[in-house]
Image 1 (cartoon, rainbow, N blue to C red):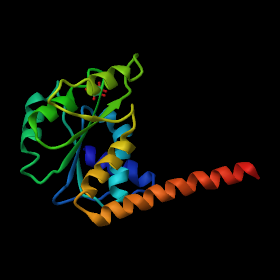
Image 2 (cartoon, protein in one colour; image 1 turned 90 degrees about the vertical axis):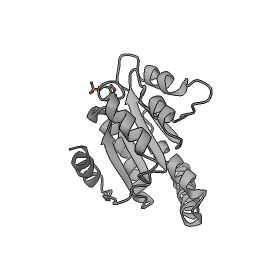
Image 3 (tube, rainbow, N blue to C red; image 1 turned 180 degrees about the vertical axis):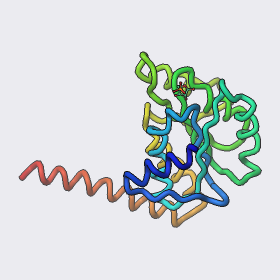
Image 4 (cartoon, rainbow, N blue to C red; image 1 turned 120 degrees about the vertical axis):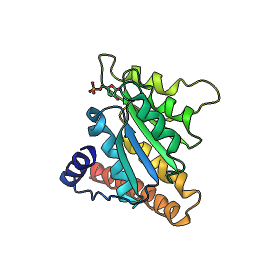
Length: 181
Ligand code: RP5
């Protein structure tokens, strides 16, 4: 199943996968073919020790499941939904229409249109139904954005985000120094 596949993918990359009793973030995607992209969101949540769940939910192939998932997420304790899809990528927008929770959309590059189709399908939401859209295939940023949102109510998490930013900055400076030598 998808959680097992995610576990082995993350294990190969040295990132521990936690299975949570009460997930705070729901990572959903239209197809298991999105997993190689969407696993990067899980990696970030692992890094920050935030419990999450991962599910395949398709707006087109399993619309009833999408309805049930989105309309019950809040009462199950989910605080943020990260939704990835490619092509006619309706999943993030439809989920945002069905829940008051913040939804982060990840456009997955799948087709001949190089991901532009996915990006526009997700970002061009009508007024009143927002989806926070990250760059094409950038599930890492979806994970980081979720951490920042959760950090509003969690000072420790926000401090760790500041540390992450400092580490990122130091990484760039170290590379720059090496180039100068
Ligand atoms: C979308 O169609 C999925 O999110 C996926 O990105 C794309 C292709 O799905 P598969 O045909 O690979 O299952 O709904």
